[in-house]
Length: 286
Image (tube, rainbow, N blue to C red):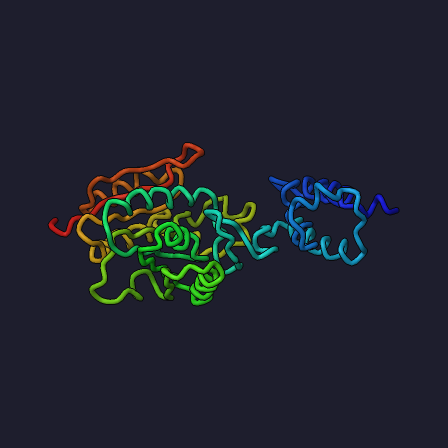
């Protein structure tokens, strides 16, 4: 009986259940959930594979496992996701930070070195982008804005937990919370950009994420158009506007920026070789 309660046997049973439920990463999911339920690091699973678990430990793990089997994202179950090496608290009111978004951070850091000034992150969610930039640019002030007050509070809590003091979060619609006359060297955004009838909305982790943070009208481009039009008033001369967007939206976003007078418009690919980030520069002299 003891062998059936060991770390190794518990993991193997969980992996099989997750495979049958359609998980894309059953071994990783099982390991993360077991570590979380035990309050132990991943190394514990490798060091003590034969250690017998108590009935209470197994029951606690199986409760978490059942939620994952039903499709709930691991990040929501354990309440945390790492982004840019920063451990961020997450909640169902916000999107789960994804590795693809780190490409936006990389491009933003590259452009931030070209001119001085504050940085604005629109639709900040957990604060992932804003906090990544603030952690890399401690001498710069970074602002994060989200429509939802609970998202703003979560982002502020993440900043406090990480000890990042050069980042401030406000709640409101896009530029509404920005003080009159304020301008930025860089405005970044990962806005809603998925079409309302996109089949991916009914698949995988996305099913559990807030639709308001995913879906936009006008073929997924409505919010990108709105931000692009209004950002011109909030950018310093030579300032940059940049978006994360869908893999098939690069040309559409470039056309939007070009039509509004931005120059040096360019699209960057993510590490899956998909169009992912499009940027444009603004000159007040235009």
